[in-house]
Each structure stands twice: as C-alpha cells, then as structure tokens.
Amino acid sequence: ALSSWTLLRGRSNRFQPMKEMFVEISGEDAFLDTNSPQYRALVFLAEQDPLKLNPNDPILSKQIIQRYVLSVLYFSTNGPSWKHRVYWLTGQHECGWQYVICSDVQEENNNTTDAGKTKRQKVGLTSDKFNPENMDDDFSDFADSDLGLGKGRIITGLKLFDNGLAGNSLPLELVELKYLHILDLGSNNLVGTIETYFSQLTHMRELYLNKNEFHGRIDANMTKGLTKLKVLSLGHNFLTGEVDDLFLRDLTSLENLSLEYNQLSGIIPTVLGTIKTLQHIRLGGNILHGEIPLSLENNLPNLQRLWLQENKLTG
Image (cartoon, rainbow, N blue to C red; front, side, top):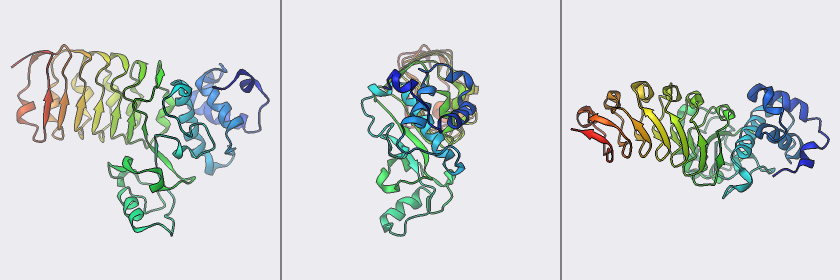
C-alpha cells in the first residue's frame, strides 16, 4: 500500500497531464479523495511507475490508460492482499502483470519460430493491425512468452479467479478495456450489485462473476448487445428477481449459462429455448416455479446438460 507521505509528496511534471487524461475517464469527483482508487492509481503512474510514461506522447496514451485501469482495479479490490500479484504495479509492461492476457499489435519478429507463427496466426496477429474478429476463442491459453512484450499490446483478458479480490463494487473504468474477451473474477469476495456497464464490452466472450457476494436484481441492460458472449457465469451469489426475456435476448451465441444457487424467482424465460447454441444450462438452487418449457428439450440441438434441481418447477 502507498503511504500517506507518498500520496502527499511533490508532484512530477507528469501528474497534471495524467490527471486531465484520467478525469475524462473517471470524472473529476473521483480525484477529490486522495485515498480513492483513482487517485492512488494516478499517483502510481505519475510518481512511482518506473516506466515514466510520457502523457504528452499520443503513441503511449493507450498504454497509459491500460495501466491506469488495471491500477484502479488493483486498488478497488484490495490488491495488496491478493493471493497472487506478481509484477503488478511494477515497471514491467502491464501485459506481463500476473493473470493479464494480451494480444500483440506489432509486426512479428523475424526470428519468430514456425510454432510461434502458428500460434500468432491462430489469434490473428500476423498483421501489424489488431483485429479482434480474427481471434480464436482459445487465445487466452497462450503464455506471455508466446506473444512477446511490446508497446502495442492490447489487453484481451483478465483471469483473476480465486485470487482474494475484495471490494464493494467493480470500477467503471473496466469499460476502457474495450477488447476484453474474457473476464474471470469468480471465487473472490466481491460484493455489491452487478453493473450494467458490462454491455459496453461488446467483444466479451466469457464473463465469470460466480461465487462472490453480488446481490440485487439482474438488470436486463447488463447483457444488451453482448451478441458474442459464449459463457455467462453468475452462479453462487445472492441475485434476486426474475430472469426475463430481455436479459437473454441478445445472447445469441451463448453456450454456457450458469445462474445456479441464487435467489431467482419467476418462471424459466421462454426465450431460453430459442438460443440454439446453448450446451449447458445451470438454474438449480433458486426459487423458480411453473412448468419446464418443452422448448428446452425440443429446440436446443446442442444441449448437453440441464440443471434445474432445487426449484419449485413442474412438468
């Protein structure tokens, strides 16, 4: 943790231009409290970061914003107490911070091995322009050493499962990671409501918020526009209310839906039987009632598992 002396010491010439950059993301009020995650992230980047990135260099602006977002997440979720945080808030490129997954937008190194080229081809990295549409869904299995490090790297995944994250809310700044394909924050100690801003992460393929302490009603706006989402895992929380058709309407690529062991009520939404890609549905351990729609059995050709136990269903 940063000491109060560090927070109050003299400022570098990077401080004010960085603050102006971050105010555009977080708003002016976020920096009124010197103990806020946003202010602490600003202090790290402007005063402590060994990289000493120049906020006046437009080439570096995307990297500065990525480091800012990760730093805000770190301070918002009690980063110093995480189980694993190798290289976080150090001079290492943020793509080398533990459990951060990136894709390279630079041209390939001429010394790249044939095996390395194959991996890059699989994730659409043979061009010097990053194209998220060309990325295979298993991109997250590649280690940092497979993709190299460079200034042009884009964050495409955060896999912080069971890592001791704790906090009352997830920071809005996450939406600045526009190319996130996978966000895994499962099995932590996160509380509060699940924000609707996830709908802005339109490249998301996998979202894991399961086994936390999220509460409140599921907001249909959370999934609006997430047509590429394949895995939605919200099980083992304290979510309430009904799962309506609007919540599922845009999830046309969904393969795995996990809402088990919450406090969800109402009937099973009929639109569920129209998502042909579904393979696994977990709705057990809620207080759902009514008949089980025949469409779940007759209209889902790829369905492999259906968990409905511990509800009040008939049929």
